[in-house]
Image (cartoon, rainbow, N blue to C red; front, side):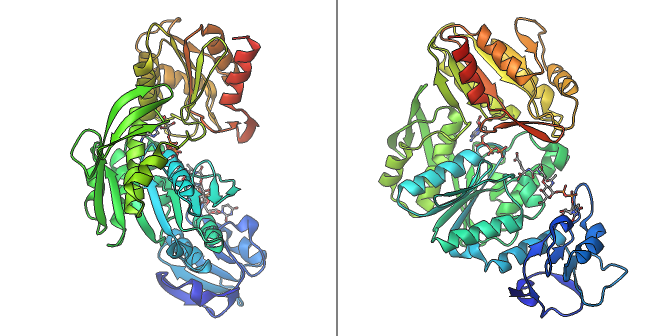
Length: 487
Ligand SMILES: CC(=O)N[C@H]1[C@@H](OP(=O)(O)OP(=O)(O)OC[C@H]2O[C@@H](n3ccc(=O)[nH]c3=O)[C@H](O)[C@@H]2O)O[C@H](CO)[C@@H](O)[C@@H]1O[C@H](C)C(=O)N[C@@H](C)C(=O)N[C@H](CCC(=O)O)C(=O)O
Ligand SMILES: Nc1ncnc2c1ncn2[C@@H]1O[C@H](COP(=O)(O)OP(=O)(O)OP(=O)(O)O)[C@@H](O)[C@H]1O
């Protein structure tokens, strides 16, 4: 139990009706799950407005309402607190409610279009190997040291974040690495968190359904850095043209990393093979099991961050070479007939281009590259033809298929992807709506030494159609199909 006035500390309040000395059980922002004595925070969402559910929340037992506009009807034994921004108030209250847990550990945020999951998961791995208790908040899972929790978002809502940070405090976690999405920043899910540092990976085409323009998307990401305190660090990739932009206007200590230009942390790729690459980082050679130029960037970001958090250079280099691939990120196996099947979460044009670039660089002869790819429904439509173009230009054969069509008509999505194909040729591009049939066809087409890339879903174990998630695992599927074909 907490006194309302304590959890309101730091919230920008514009009006109050009732007592703020009341004790509260828990905070809730969804009227459907309110329980007796809760504080209900009304949020203006993208689909509906939480203010419409205030009466329902009170009927279920809410004793405090946090709102941006006072309702016309005021109920006697209920306290109303008017705030300037519901999302912001929710985040600050969540932090206060859990005793500001981000202040009791070193929290590092990772943002950018691609690489967030990879970098935060590998930092988690590295600090665990270095002997620390570590936390992770990522798209794949939340880890409270060794305990795993399921998650539905890249950056969860503020209550979920602070609840898990509190669990981390309880078991003595010293470092936590978390992904910070642009949705998360825009909806102020990370407001009030005490970041020790923040990393910027890169910025490319994505989420233009939500942010409308690329400039708005970039400026939202930038807020993470703009709001950091002086003692925090910022580490940005300055090979990306937005790397320097992220450094402007921040009070934090500024550090850079790059492969191609001058930076505080530099790397070179010396050798690239299927099972790893040899890198020269900060003058020392290190073998990484993760391949591709994009992973050289990821390794460098991890190296810089580990140094900024106080680990010794030689220890970091040793641990870098031990890091294992993250689930669904260039996850591959070689079949009986020496067909290489790769499952990768590339679901943006840039990621798809990078992964196909890596594969093409590793080809030694006439191996065919067969790509299976689709684009999600109810999400950024403008990337569909771009991804269709990239896949068809960079693969021997491309099979377009469904990837979480959600509430959209899968055939319409596929038509938009196909619109990006320049050379229409049945040997080069095929469209097979069923993902299972598409993967099966890729397996049937593949001969010894060929490479199958199944892009877009990575670690996901479901296909979402009309709000229903049915089990679907690309890695499991391609393994079973190649085995069934005795390949
Ligand atoms: C577009 C978007 O980001 N939506 C998020 C947002 O929901 P919303 O604005 O749509 O909420 P809404 O349905 O309009 O409702 C507004 C308010 O009314 C409340 N309500 C609603 C109905 C009711 O009966 N009673 C009630 O109280 C809701 O609880 C909410 O507080 O706030 C919710 C609570 O935090 C999120 O769960 C929800 O994420 C949706 C499910 C989602 O899919 N988000 C994705 C796009 C997302 O956030 N992705 C990013 C990045 C991914 C990436 O980088 O690839 C992520 O961080 O995961
Ligand atoms: N540093 C990087 N630069 C460009 N592409 C990358 C980078 N790291 C990984 N990728 C590619 O992008 C895909 C997604 O990587 P990852 O999951 O780490 O990104 P993310 O930012 O977490 O994406 P999301 O927010 O959508 O979960 C990978 O499967 C890989 O193909």
